[in-house]
Structures are given as structure tokens and as C-alpha cells.
Picture 1 (cartoon, each protein chain N blue to C red):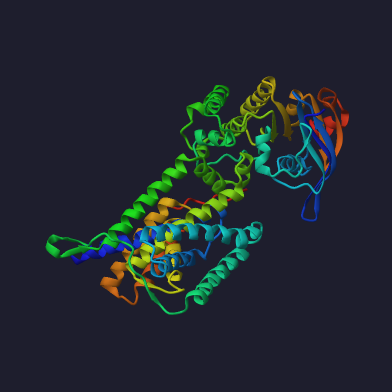
Picture 2: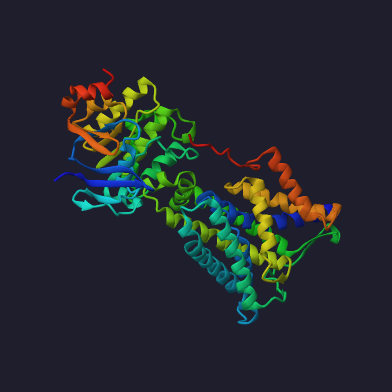
Length: 293
Length: 236
């Protein structure tokens, strides 16, 4: 029975990774850059909820909506200030800038909220479910996380397949110049991608802090790296890849922690990534990159 | 007044000057060929007109309006479509999705559906393969898709960059027939081609580009009989 409970926890943690990985993979697909500040946007989202609920006594729904809006705006502003001027610069310059933004956000939070770890109150009010005569318990947060992940994935896929903006995103991800010839505003499409990714980061952050109820300026860093790993694992640029990569990573991490070693769980996760990339360099669902001749 | 007028255009790639002050015009209803060797600046000229590249000097006027500084994504809404070199179809999207993106700036759903029918009529192969992803099409079919996609914006002028490049002779003939048909239906055409013989055969007038400058221009039929053109471009 404990195996099933580990598995469920793994899927739940993996769902959070998957939602975060969406931000990495969409931005990579469309702007061809790795936004290493993405993890820290999660942390800012958590602080927004923490402050609104703790200091302003707003209810959780309003706080979460505010965090989503706040992170969306933050993502767009980061893109505009830090990345847009580098549109034609070398990928290395953009990468270093992203790392710089990441440190900036962490230190900004450090000044604003202090270094001490805050205890985060779960925003989920779904009760814990007991199954198999109490042998198997599934927490409300776990249920909420998995359901949120399913809804987000489905909504995103429908949005991309059916809406005009979604099709524009696909066009830009394949060929910026050709998309522009169709009349697609490439800059606006990139902004939209950052907005969606960052808004989702807020949701992932709230779920993460509800499941692991501590909050510090560095809360987003490790899940950010793990979600990035999940995105690469699944095939960066692919949305279903983010889902599969995220879930697998979460399950491997929890099972590794339970059955092999709790200290080595992160090492196991990255070892699996290395093996996958050795066998299939494009990730599980990654497309073969065509070299232009 | 000319429909499209390029005046003293200069374009640079970094420090290298690709276009060294060219001027030409395209009148409504004409088929104009821009011919020249590799690296003469033909593609650069088209890309500058539709805002993919920025001009350093000079002006581009479309229907009397200066479009030199108009951002690239707005050009298509003004009635100018560009079939880029190498076709550049969206390989992972279906034929249908590619065509829909061609009408990205248009709002009226009924009119878009009408245009789609017209494109399918002109290119029955595209209709057959509408649910196939564009990357699985042959080179000739991709060229048709690129042309159909451009027509989906209902342009008054189409800029075509090397539409016959890399195609089998049968497809080349078909592509040139389609260009004539597009012209006959009232769309103005600015055609960039290395296949000078074919291009001159269907063009009204032509300009010959040599290393960023216009070396010759005039009536297409007369240019065909020009001795230096024959030698340099027609292989006679």
C-alpha cells in the first residue's frame, strides 16, 4: 500500500513540476531562450499569496488570482526589460541575463521579506481522503494539484490548437520571419508566452507551498531547476513532453527517496536525465532539430 | 502613379552594402521580373520591401504611402503578400492550418472560407492533402502551399522569391502557369527568379540586378533579345 501512496505523491509532485516546466518549454519553443528566472517567479507568486492572506486577511481565492495577475505582469515586464533588448544578441548573453534576473528576484525578495523561512498556510480546503480502510491517505493538496495540472494542460492544448493566438504561437515557434509575413506580431506573441508561463508559475508556486509549507527567497530555485530538467527530459519545446517529463521526474524523485536514499533522491533524478539524454538527446518527445542548409 | 515604388534603396548587412541605391517601380496589373545572379541582392530587395530587413537609405512607397518604416507584421494588412525564398511553410502544422495562418490578419469568417475555397480550386493537391502536415509535402507542393498561403491574405500585390528553385521541370512549368493565373485574376506580381528565361517569358517588364545595382531594365521581350542578357542569363 505504501508503494501506491508514494506513487500518488510522486504524480502530485510531478504535476507541479509539469506546470512549471510548461513555462520553460513554451518560452524555449517560441523565444528560443532558457528563462532561468522562471523558478523565482514562482517564489514571488508565493510571497504575494503569503502577504495577502497573512497581512491583509484576504481569502485564498482572491489571493491566488492576485498572485496569478502579479506573476503574469512580472513575467511580461521581465521579458520587456531584460530579454527584449537582447533579441538579436548571442544566446549566451541571454542566458547570463536570465541568471542575473534570477539572482535579482531572489535578492529583491530577501530585502523585502527577509531571509527567515516563513510557514505557508495551505490554500487548499479539500479534506484528506482515506482509502483501503485507512491504509491509503490522499491529502487534499494532492488531489487539488493533480486536478489543476489536468485542467491546465487540457486548456492550454485547446488554446494552442484552436485559438488564433495559439496558432500564431506555433507559427512563431517554427519560423519567426515567416510568421511575421503572415501578419503575426512576433514581439506580442513572445510577451503572451511569458504571460501564460508566468501566470501558471504562480499557480504551481501556490500548490508547491501548500504541499511543502515553507517559504523563503530560495523556494523557487530548486523546483525551477527540477522543472527545467523535466522539460528537457520530456523534450524541450513540447507541451505534452513537459507533462510526461514532469510526472516521471516527480515519481522518480519520490520513489528514489523512499526506496533508495532520501539524500540521493536529487542525484537519482539528474542521473536519470543524463541517461535519457545519452540515449535520446532530444528528450522523450523532442523533435529532431532540422539544420537549415 | 506606380503601385509599388522603390527609390534609391540602400541596404546593409552589418558593414557590407548589399543594395547600392536601386530604384524601380511596379504598376498595377503588371508582372515584373527581378533577375540576376546569386548574391545580386534580389532576395534582400524583397525582404526590405516587406519589412524583414531595414533600409539604411531610400524609400519604399506602396500605393502612394511610405512603408519604409512600417513594421513587418503590418505590411500584409496593407495588401502586400510575400512568398519567401525556400517556401518557409510551417512544417509541423497541417496544410489547412498553414492556409488559415495566411488569413491571420483577416476578420470576416465567410470571406476567409471563400478564399480558402478559391485556393483549393487553384491547387487541388492542397485540398487532397489538407490534413497532412506541411513538412510531408513534396517541394513542389510546399511551393504551392506557400503561394496559396500568401493568397489567403487577399493581396493586391504578391512578391515571389525564387518560386521555381529546386523543383522538377514539370513543377517549374506548373508554378509559372499558376503565376500567370494569379496575374490574370488581377493581382500584381513582383517576381524574383534565377530562371531568367521563364521569368522573362511571363513578365511585362524586368530589371536586371548586378551586385546591388540595377544594370539593365526594360520590356521583358526586348531584354530576351538583348545580346548581353542572352550571354549572361539565358545561356545562349
